[in-house]
Length: 159
Image (cartoon, rainbow, N blue to C red; front, top):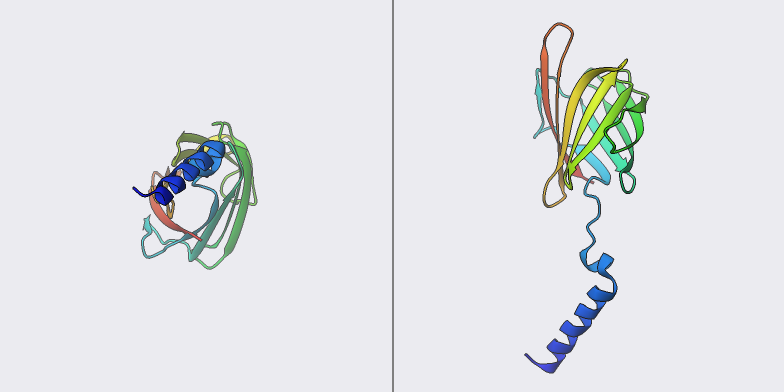
């Protein structure tokens, strides 16, 4: 190993030691704007929305989640949730379907969500970010009042 290479390695090591947040910090993989890839999505019984974008912002366990899209029948929709990943219900603004969400962080790349309407569980959702941070898979399940099951898998790409 030549002297220049050794000097470069030492300087890099000192920089990492002096600024560990730069060398080792991992940003929250959920933060950002996610656009659904309808070619990879599976909606059972369907049909899927025509478009869907999820924007997640925040730090620590605090989140602001904005969802906008066009439903399967062509109607636009939007909702906003400000919450903490504390497993407690937080109000959803703008949704015609649910009035609260409770987020629980499972690990660095997984969140479980319970969506409620009038205090009753309406839907369960799991968000999982891929190891490379480029794909968000949202799996949701619910049973309607007639016993019909809905199982959807949305595959989203980071924008």
